[in-house]
Length: 207
Ligand code: SF4
Ligand code: SF4
Image 1 (tube, rainbow, N blue to C red):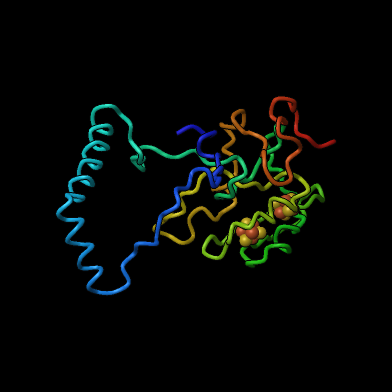
Image 2: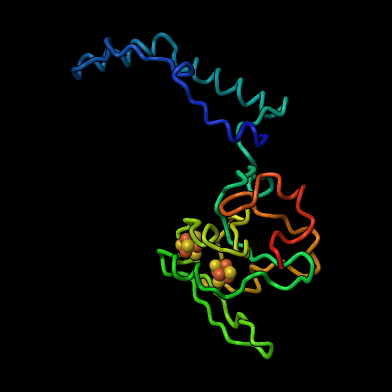
C-alpha cells in the first residue's frame, strides 16, 4: 500500500450501500422462517464462493488485503507522533537541546525529566533527560514547544519492550553520531517548512 493510498481518508457517502431494513423480521417465528429460506436458497455457498474467490486472488495473484506484520509495515504519515528523537546540530554534531526545560514544563503527562548543570564554559549542559513512555500520551506538545527543533517525534511506533525504562534515555533517542548525515529535519510540529530538508544545508539556527 502506498503512502497516498494510506493517507486517503475519503470515505464519502458514495461508497456506502444502503441496506433495505424494511423486511427485517421482528418476531422469533419470522427470524426462523428467514433462516430456513436463506439456507434453502444456498446463501451459505454464496459466502463460501466469495471467500474462495478472495483466497485465490491472494494466493495466486498477490492481491493481499492484509500486511504480513512484522515483515511488512504500513507507512506512517509524516506527522505521526511516535517515539521521540533528539536531533544533533548538523555542523558540530553536538546535541541541539539547550536544557531550557520548556518541554518538561508543557508536558501534560509529567513524563519528561531534565537535569542540567553549567559546564566549564558556563553554558548549560544536559546531565540527564528522560521521557517516561509509560506516562507519555504522544500529544506532541514537547516537539511543538521546543525552540531548538531538538526534540521531534520519529516514525518508530513499536513501543513494546521488556523493560519500562527502554527508549527513555537521552542517548537512546539521540541521533547516533555516525548517522548524522542521515538525520532528517522534522516535517511536523515546529518544523521550518515542508521542504526544509531540501533547502537546509546547515542547522536552521543563527548560531
Ligand atoms: S508527547 Fe506529550 S506527553 Fe509525551 S513527552 Fe511530549 S509533551 Fe509529554
Ligand atoms: S524544549 Fe527543546 S531545547 Fe528545551 S529542554 Fe526540551 S528538548 Fe531541550
